[in-house]
Image (cartoon, rainbow, N blue to C red; front, side):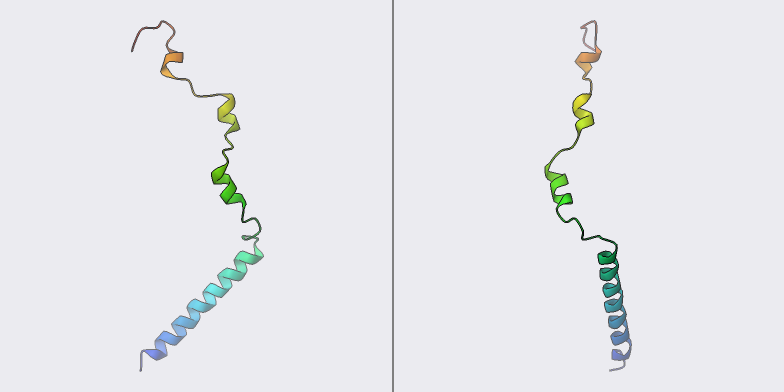
Length: 67
């Protein structure tokens, strides 16, 4: 019974912190664009890498001898 006097304020504190974090996230537009992260994973935007592909060891070797 005595532990209830500690557990109830702790639970209310956690609930208050969770409620504050939720309203902070909504106010700071954390939920504004929910689709961007899903699309970022699916669609590759490495346009810089496509223009200048990395050189392979065969392209760097001009005389044709194996290394």
